[in-house]
Image (spheres, rainbow over the protein chains, first blue to last red):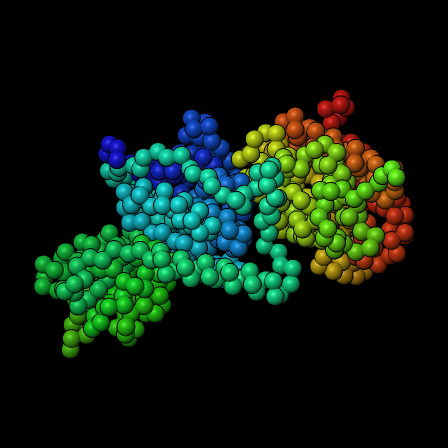
Length: 351
Length: 250
């Protein structure tokens, strides 16, 4: 690893993607994601790469679909309202097996909403958003360092499974500066037999998502489901904090998990055995993390109205012991606020 | 025995799913003939649309992708920008796809001067979905969603895409042709071949609008549709070159 740099989240992500061999970026400006586009606009001439400012997110998502069809790495970045426009292409890329990486710097929503730290897009990135039965791998870093680390992995996962991968952050993670060690620069290994480059010395390749009949299309879908089941079994990632002795476990991802770390510290100082499970993959949801956690209470903390709660309830042994605390609209809770909520639940649950 | 005509080998054995008398089959064959004559099979990627030509990737022994409705120019942008300049990228779209759903994508591809060739099939109707009104539908033309005939005060007037695209600086070549007679079919082939050559020379967006007939959607016998193109469509959509490096003072 190289030297330590002091970098903003968006820029660290962009530089990590370039170092991972992603030399094609297109996107439409939207706060709080725009520095990724700006960074690429500046860097692509130096790298002999391509930056396109697309006319819409609809076009941007479809451009990276085309770019990845040639076997090259490609990325776009946007925020909630822009991701909503791109979801038709998410469904397309998942069905067509196109390994693009999409960054969603989430906003609160719904509609235009505000631009501050929020996690309003859990449903739309995790549950699909687009039409049909498909999934996309969703990675949720919680620091600038983790953004830098997960970005090259996003490209690897996308190509391993021929499926789009989403990296979610928010206004806090994207805009804050932290010290970071960036990944080494690598050349993309291109060993694909499905790409569109002109059928020279091989049979021609076709990428289509158009059925030729219900039986054929059911088979196509069953094969897709097989792939998603493999991903769900193999790619669950999470980090556990002090759960061994905990009787109360926070479940949080992204920026709010950073806040929760301070809450755990304070709770422990006050004699409360609090731990945390931090999902790193939102899809596949890290069910394995919860399998052995019996006789514990869970507090899901999110910057939305509880979009992840149902996934936690499906993963824990007793769904009646799952509670929720969230803030909306771009408001972030303080560590004390979370601590007070935990103390209140502790008192109630131990009456 | 001397072979005087044979099916282009670049076409697969699959049957075209187009209706009898439809112009798509003619244009597909023209593309296949040019790719074969110019030995471009190994260099070509075709981006197909959603519409009646949605199955066309099954007809060609050529690298192909079928884009979502209207998005073919965006997908082609991603493809062309990632391939060496001597690759040939063809975008094939109908009027619902290009003029309605994908108006932003085609206009902005022209604005950027993307170096691919667009073949735009204008048959003034939505064929695949069952004969609904298109932005290109003629005034007074009856379709399933304009059962009393298209009215300008309700739906606006037909859009002349070849002229519109020609007005954009990034467009290098724009021509409107038709496939309703042997003479026009040969002219279509010349225009498409010219557009492919411009692309291979690294020029900007080339746009070929092909007036095409739709017997099923128009509710006419195939022979009648050829006359309809000649008598009605050409009045609204004149044939000709609207932008070309060979013609000055456009």
